[in-house]
Length: 237
Image (cartoon, rainbow, N blue to C red):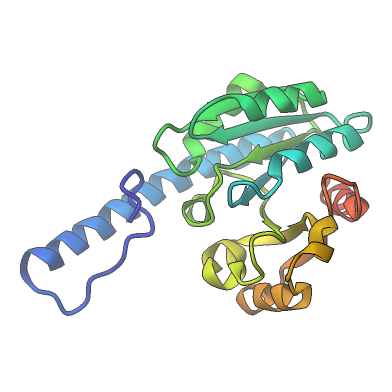
């Protein structure tokens, strides 16, 4: 169980006494936390809608290539659309610094021991960042395929980024995340010749969890397949 937010806790069965009471208490805490988060998320969503800002929540394991994809996206789109970024990490401002170098305003949220962003954090960051009307807001969540699945930030949708170096079974191992995501970006496809990774099996696993999920294959490093990602975003915008 996540000791920070209370999410993802297991449920006790057929236990009596104190353990059953503790399980009920943990479930109640989780419900309260998610209810408060959802209220903040709805406020964020209304604020974004009033300004016609498209917000995407990028989620993945650490090292999937989220920041590289963000930097490439900024380079491709900044002449046509204003884009800003909220960066989530437990520590450091390395990623926000990298995004600013790519040409977009960014604000860093350090969660400390926290394993995900929540809607209040994002709402506070949006007020400070103040993205312009008719713009694109990209939210890079903390690298984690568990907790961010449960936390609505007010975004238009979640985008799950999966690197081919991670193994094709990730959608089955972390079904909540891939069920919550509208899009799965399969990144680092330039490495496929060097890996035992079955693309079709990975896509099949993702669609067992979420039959409607859109799959975009690309390499953020080389740019291969990037146009498919840009076309999807343009459609959303």
